[in-house]
Amino acid sequence: MMPVPAAGVLQQHWPVPLAVHRFKEASEVNPVLGRVFNALRATDVMAAPGSFYASADDLLKRVDLPEFSALLQFIAASLQATAQQANAGVWPKGRHGLQLDLVGVWFQIQNGATFHDIHTHGNCSWSGVYYVQIDPPEQRHTHPEFGLLNGATRFYSPLFPLLGGAYMDMGNAWLQQATLDVTPAEGELVLFPSFMPHKAMPYVGERDRIIVSFNAQIRSPGGDQLFRYAGT
Image (cartoon, rainbow, N blue to C red; front, side, top):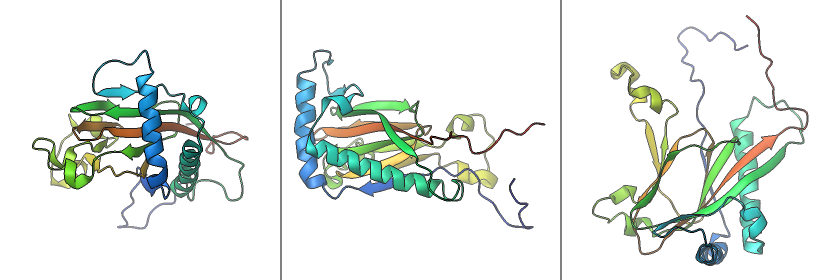
């Protein structure tokens, strides 16, 4: 049970964690991954024509390269660090033998003003997007229509679905900024809870926008429920 706060002390509950990690080996790994992903797209008989492509989420079975393994190791280490920070004070003390599983890994390629509309990810606690290739910010931000949002990843507040009918005034002004736009950079990894609605904004560039995305579960062999359900 939460302790009763002291009089006049503001408590902020249920924050949404989001983390950005930088892959040190990106300059060597990303060009290889870009070539491999384009080759997979070219040989996919189910690929639809156009400027947007999403692979199946079975890359763990289909790609066996040291560069891809290096990226997966980086993703796993970043997930471990972020999950520990997000659960600080919640996970019991000591070692838990937690098992981290990537339950789906895929890539997407987009250009020509295509986008990936608002969605969430299921069957996982964490998801992420790793930027393999995209035009530099100073180049893509000159687009006459998209500007700073050209190729950005937009996250939506979990309260966003409630705002359409919510009463808004200066008293709850903190709710009015309901989106967060992340400017992509090659070699950066963004981790977020799987329930977070997000969208890949329209992109136009000289080079395709290529990302790796994934879903992850972090399970305990002794069971995942820490808090017992209380009766009324």
